Image (tube, rainbow, N blue to C red; front, side, top):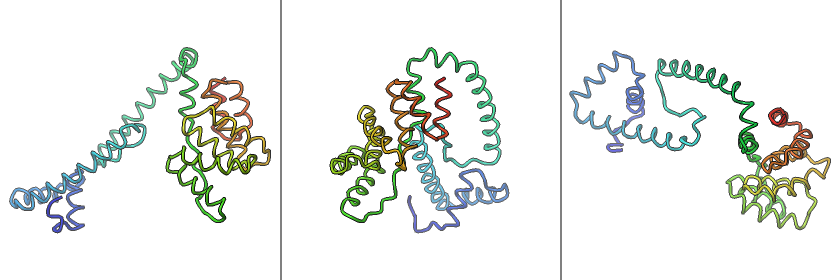
Length: 244
């Protein structure tokens, strides 16, 4: 943005109100008169608006593949009310379509189990990354990789620890969910099964839930149902209803 040394917080907020059409009519009239009479001010306002447009375009780009989330563009009160009414109508219409189509969908669509998996699968958020002993350092160092989405690197570090403690439910659980997040379902299942073999594991409900998802992904429906029935997660009950 040009002339940034001349831009105060007050001016930025004023231009933002003008840009977003939230400026009161009297203030807008005075503002536009100054735009007509002050060429330097006009240029400065154009620079700020270009900056605001750039922010909006970047936000739209980042959210393009997440169309179900609210697009972060400011709207005036009338626009918001209009969109709320439109959205309510769309929800009613969509609900009607779902009621009519849902029975046919599950029967006719060969990828329905995968769609159900995609609707419910979210990677485990992981543990807080505090470090102490050497082994703990390796574990939480891998946890940092996991949280950054570098599942392969996390798995490679955790598997070193798993070789030393093959029955450790924490390590087995996170290797399993990391493989699942990395779209390697076949490798995830054995580790999740090892986790549930530790009956007093703090991860028992989580492990059954992700194990159910893994079986669902592989179209092993009866095994998926058995796992979901042993998980106390609300999502497990919702998936079981969908599988009936």
